[in-house]
Length: 285
Ligand SMILES: O=P(O)(O)OC[C@H]1O[C@H](O[C@H]2O[C@H](CO)[C@@H](O)[C@H](O)[C@H]2O)[C@H](O)[C@@H](O)[C@@H]1O
Image (cartoon, rainbow, N blue to C red; front, side, top):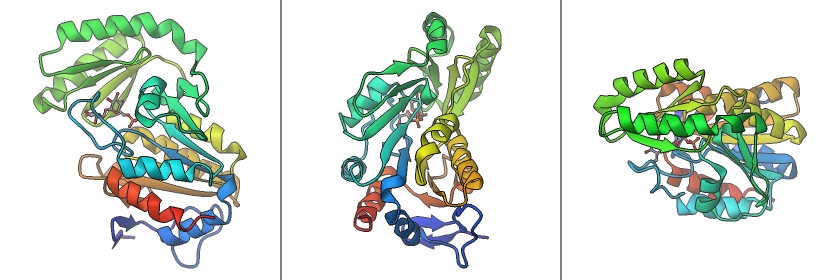
C-alpha cells in the first residue's frame, strides 16, 4: 500500500497489532489512544543521532532537539520506561541528555548500559577488546586520507566521511580489511562505518530483553542499525497478540528507503519528533 501524507507523518498501515488485524489501519492518533490504555506498561525507545539530535558534520557538536528532550522528560513519569538505545557511549548520552530519572541509557549498541542515572555497566566479554580498538583508532588516523574523521569510542571505532564524501569507498574498503584482519564486526551507518568487537550485542537484542515485561512499546530510529530494533518489536508482538508495538522512522533521503519501509510511521526530523511527542503527551493519562 502506498504511504499517505498526514502532516509531518507518513502513514504506512497497518500498524502492528499482533495477531489482530485492524478493520481499518491505525493512524498515529489511534496508536497513541491504544497506548493511553496501557501507558504504565509501555516502553518508549529512542535512538540518539538523527532521531533525537539533528545530524552535524562534527559528531562532538550534536545536541538533542530541545523540544524532543523536554517531551521525553515529561513522558518519563507517564510510561513504564524510556530507553535511549544508541551507538554512542553511555557517558556521551548522559552528557547530552542530562540525568533524567526514569530514563535508561544503552550505549555502544548495548555493550554499555546505565539504569535511571545509575553506574555504567560494561559487557564483560567486550572489555578485552579495548586495547585493540585504541590501536585501530591510531592506525586509522595514520593511514586514512585527510578528511576522514576517526571517532574512538573505547569499544568501537567509527570512521566518518561526511565532510569528504568522495572518500566513502576508500574508508569502507580500509575498514572492512581491518575488520577481516582483526576479527571485528562492521556496522554501516550514515556516512560512517563502525568497527566493533565480535560480541553478540545489538539494538535488537536490547529491545528484545527490555520489552519482555512490557505490554507495549514504541521505537524511534533513523538508521539501518535500528531495523534490528524494529524487528525485535515485531517478534515480541508475534509471540504475544496482546502486545502493541509501533516502529517509527525519522526518515529523510539520506536515511534511505530501507529504514522507512521497515517502519509503521515516518517523521521527517528530530524537531518534528519533538512536536509529535509533545502532542502525544496530551493524549496520555
Ligand atoms: O545509534 P545512533 O545514536 O544513531 O549513533 C549512530 C552514529 O551516530 C553518530 O554519527 C552520525 O551522526 C554524526 C553527528 O550528527 C554525523 O556527523 C555522522 O555522519 C553520522 O553517522 C556517531 O558519531 C557515531 O559514532 C554513531 O555510530
